[in-house]
Length: 367
Ligand code: UD1
View (spheres, rainbow, N blue to C red):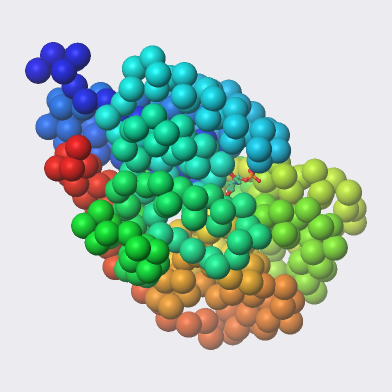
């Protein structure tokens, strides 16, 4: 088959969690020879995340190919980011339209490219479709609802996500419960996880410390919340808390001084370093969605600093609990882990490392 007869599939990625999700797709594209022969994959990097530690490092470690197109959109308001990605991706489609546009997750890059594609008559596939937190004040929830309302093929991480889609009137034949591409990537890279340099400098040992990640506007934009979480950590003088800081959080953190020695602040970590720390942590305090899934996979106790989650299986089946802004519950939860009383958990159905394989085989049948 000649190059020109190949069908074109665009894969969109813009932020750190997107890169983790698409890595397993590219890994499988290289393995399944019939897929490689029949399709031309174009990777579109929107540039929503552009810092070395949020972008380049992930491409290198996870062996993601160089993007075919870099939109370099950068930071800005939601409307600015979304509109600029839409305009730039539209130009690419008009020049050479793809047969399918694959978007992942719930970030501004996801909805922007879905709209540009759909309005030009291109079919859209959404990986991680059907997740709902029920909290419309979150920008990600708006992105999820809008993306799913114009998606053609829905790939889901849980049966609950299937139910959410069915409730919204999506036809069953277009919903595919395939599992979790983020867990594929984790399984593929387990033997490459490595100690960050802060391991030695802080004399860390396996299961001797907690991890902390915060980046949601609701936790970090209001400095009072950030201060409160830090004040709880202060109370656990004998515990170490490792805090790799997201750029959004750094801006606020710079306004707080007088951290105690038990709070170890670091720049964002690479994938291999971060997941080494997660796997070996006593527990993690986080407001990320993806990290609750990775903690569930590792069966590491996870305290989510949010009132709700779009990933309820991490609570029903996994190692996660919702803390919200109940700081007493956070204290109690840390004590429970210290006393070895955390709940027993399991890895959810189909989080088995074969999700990207399932997705590509389904796509091969439908387009
Ligand atoms: C975005 C996603 C969020 C996801 C998170 C993962 C949306 C609406 N939000 O949030 O769902 O969980 O990514 O990290 O899409 N910045 C840098 N360097 C970068 C990127 C951003 O310094 O490479 C700074 C900018 O000043 C920017 C701020 O971080 O204003 C926030 O970045 P932005 O892309 O707006 O959203 P995130 O908070 O990263």
